[in-house]
Image 1 (spheres, rainbow, N blue to C red):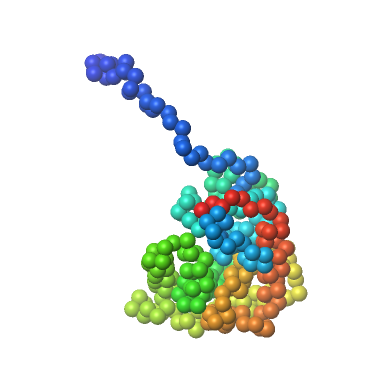
Image 2 (cartoon, rainbow, N blue to C red):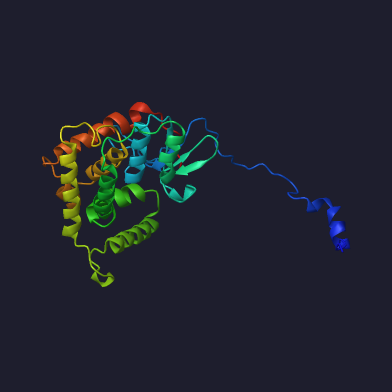
Length: 291
């Protein structure tokens, strides 16, 4: 037997305020409509009195942002750049991300798939072991860069505090820097044997040096590590250019890439990719500041 409708429910159906929303109010600040995909990356604010990106300097000082920028350049993908220092403004709380005209936001993990779907995929790699080399760089070179930027005092002053945290008040900058430095030291277990087998500073540096030596042998006389622009080239060029941003007094910087070192061919290779592919001053107009 059917359950009869409650009298109160029938009454509510006839009252207009039960139909939501009661009133639609236009937002005061609408999202800017864009016609070209826009890549949000770490960088100096251009609207808050901070120095703009300078010719010959990195367009961004974050490895993942620089890697993604290089990857999009390699694929000849049309896009604008928005500089920001607020990762919490992104959909997943991380930079970089790509905002499409449709309103869809794609984080760095989905950008390569997006390139394939839109017909901008990179050509098939000529290097059979490309994935193995990428894993080697991520395991050995990225930890050294994180140490250089957040734990080493000289690198922290120039990169960690000077580039990532410059837009915060001093007290907040100190707190955020201390938290980030502690997290990196904990993750690398440097100087903290109470957390288990400590990763010695010399071991960290030695792992990075051996990785650079392997990449130097792989490069040889070729223009690109994989024979043509590839995911590996984007990652390695990003790592080396970020290392070059650190001051020479930084132990990691001076140990990995001293002036007139045997790694000069790698340095020249990374700078060439920066000049020909990455530098947005030459081949892309910058979008409005995204911070």
